[in-house]
Image 1 (cartoon, rainbow over the protein chains, first blue to last red):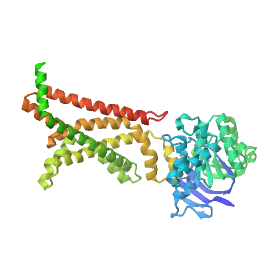
Image 2 (cartoon, each protein chain N blue to C red):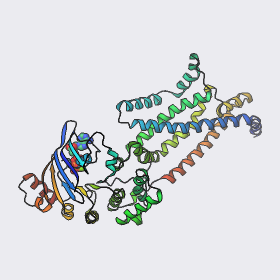
Image 3 (cartoon, chains in turn brown, green):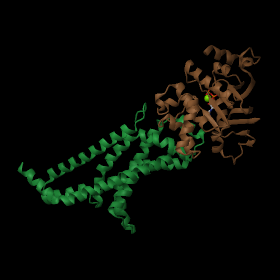
Image 4 (cartoon, rainbow over the protein chains, first blue to last red):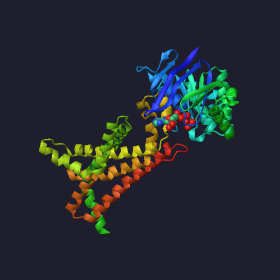
Length: 245
Length: 225
Ligand SMILES: Nc1ncnc2c1ncn2[C@@H]1O[C@H](COP(=O)(O)OP(=O)(O)OP(=O)(O)O)[C@@H](O)[C@H]1O
Ligand SMILES: [Mg+2]
C-alpha cells in the first residue's frame, strides 16, 4: 500500500526553482534513500513533504489524502511524521526523558505517568534508557541521535524522515545509527532517508533516488547506481563521494 | 562619635516615615519587576512575528523607550495629562512609565539571547507539530530566559535604584523620606550616606538571589550570556 506519494512536486525560493517535477512513491514499511550533491534540494524535499515549507506546485498524497490542499491541518500531518535531523536538534533545556515526553504530553495530552512509560519504552529500544536523566550536552553525538530517534518514534509516526542522520557523526557512531535504521527496517517502519553517506546507503539497502538540481535523475538499488552508471553526473557524484569516505 | 549617636536618635524618631518610604520603594520596584518582565516577554514575542509591520512596531517601541529619558515620560503623564483632565496617582504613573521603559530593555535582552539559540531546535519543534505559540512557550522562552538571567537581574537592580526617580512625581518612596528627614534635621551628609548604604544592602540581596537562581537553572554545557 502506498503511504506517501508526490505528483509533479515543485518548489521555488524567490522564483528560483529548487525542486522540479518530483514524482516519488513510498510504500508502507518501505525505506527509500535520497542522495545527491550539496544544495540539490534534499532537505527542501523533506521540508515540503511535512509542509514546513509550502510547495509551489504539484501534489503530496499522504495515505490517500491530498495534504497540499489549503485546508490541510499541517500540524496534524507533522505529528504523523517523525523527523530526525543532522544536528540532532534535541531541546537542550530538557533532560533526555523530557525531550521524549514533551510531544506526548503537550501534543497528545498524555498524562505524565503514561508518557514517561512510553518514553522509557522507546529509549530502551534505542538503548538509551539508562541515560534518561542526562541533558543533551552530556551525550555523545551517536547517543544524541538515538534520543532524537526515540523522540520521533514515541509519537508513533506513520513514517520517519532522516535528514543526513550520520553526517555529524564519526564512523563508529554512524555505525550505531545504521544499526538502528536496520533494526527499524526489520520492524517495518516506513522511512525516507536523505544522505551523502554511501556507506549508510549501502548498509541499509532500500531503493536509492538520485537528486540533482532539484530533479530526480535515477532510481535503483544502491549497487546499480554506485556501479558504472550511464549518466556521467551520477558517476561523478558517486566516485567523488566514494573518494571522500 | 556623639554626633552619630544623635543622628541615629533622629533617625529613630523619623523611623515610621522612613520605613513607609522603604515599603513604597520595595512595592514599586517589585511591581515594575513583574510587569516589566511580563511586558518584555510580550514585546519579545511580538518581535518574532512573521508580520513585518508587527516587527517594525515592536522595534520602534523598543527604540523609543530606550531612547527617551524616563523622567520625560513620567512628567508628561503626571504634570501633562491633568491639562487634558486626566489625573493619575503617583504610583499609577510610576508603574505605567517604568513598565513601558523596563519592558523595552527586557525585550532587548531577550532578543539578544534569542540570537544565541539553535534554530534547528525550533525547527525540530515545528516539525514535531507544535504550534508557534507552543514553540515559544516550551522551547524559546525557557532557553532565552535562562540565558538572560544575568541581564534580567541587573535590570531588577536598576528597577530598585531608579525607583527613586518617582520621588519627582510626588511618590513618597524611600529617597523622598530621606530627603525630608535630611532637611528637617539638617543632616545632609549622614542621611544621604545612610540612603546609599540601604540601597547597597538591598542590591546585595538581589545579587545573591540571582546567583542562586542561576546556579539552580544552569544547564550542563550551556553558559549564560
Ligand atoms: N529558506 C531558503 N531561502 C532561499 N533559498 C533556500 C532556502 N533554503 C534552501 N534554499 C536553497 O535551495 C537549494 C536547496 O537547498 P537544500 O537545503 O534543500 O539542499 P540540500 O540538498 O539539503 O543540501 P545539503 O546537502 O547541503 O544539505 C539551495 O540552493 C539553497 O541555497
Ligand atoms: Mg540538507
